[in-house]
Length: 378
Ligand code: MN
Image 1 (cartoon, rainbow, N blue to C red):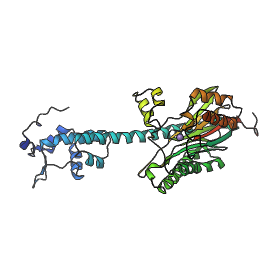
Image 2 (cartoon, rainbow, N blue to C red; image 1 turned 180 degrees about the horizontal axis):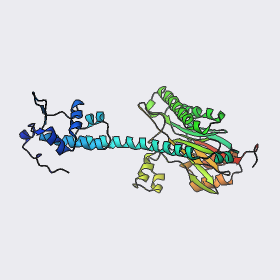
Image 3 (spheres, helix red, strand yellow; image 1 turned 45 degrees about the horizontal axis):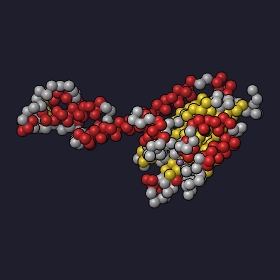
Image 4 (tube, protein in one colour; image 1 turned 180 degrees about the vertical axis):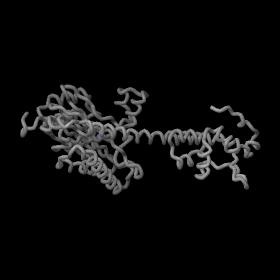
């Protein structure tokens, strides 16, 4: 940091425009070119512009503001936003920086998913696609009101290519979850070329978001209505995963159960930050508080996670709402999935187990097995 050589001047003197643009640039580590730009944008006006020469003169008291501007620039904050933020009191600047950084991290996460998806798609060989093209899904889905809730706001779907579960909430919860799943359902009927998967998913998510927003808008409490959405899309050799909220996707492989989604909840974030343990999270009073769900804010639609997942013959996938996972321990879910002869049996065993445990919430679940297709043995 610079030494506060001129900064300790008396208050009156501090407002005297005594610094040339060159001196001011040196003290603030902003270039003269940047200072001229910030002047033009109204971000940092010189204290005085000499009438004849048009030389910009700055007051020592402006150094602190200019340094803040420089640091915010280094953070990548857009100039228009800095113009709003820089004049605020330090606690408000701190809040604005936190908010800005949360947005950056969300955007980065979405781009990381996209990058991984593209790398995956571009590095897959023709041979791989051929050798696995005979695989297909056997599937079943069910939703159940449970034993306590007055209505069922969960939606579930299983088809030849799509497994989807949505857990709606708020006054329009039931139509919201139905609309989200409904927007994905048509992908069942389309064989997608690998190059089409991303765009088809993006379109389907946009359509789901639009449909959920419309449902929410038709209720008395648009802000309070929304839905989770967890989708597995079969591409003929792999699964694409789209996920937002706290419904979950799992795979049972070689007798072991693996969770392949992360909950978008405040509690999951506390665990991630090491502030509470996973065990504490399970009984946390706010464990259902979602950080992300559809449709998101009107000016910032929610961004689901997007992944691809390698499949193997013999894999059994489970997508389900928290009506199962908040109630049954992972080991219990593993046992039930492993013991079921087929997806139909699996979904019914899971719902029966939830009922036996009191079924306080709605249950939505979809199960699919990856099998070698009957039409193309081998
Ligand atoms: Mn639920």
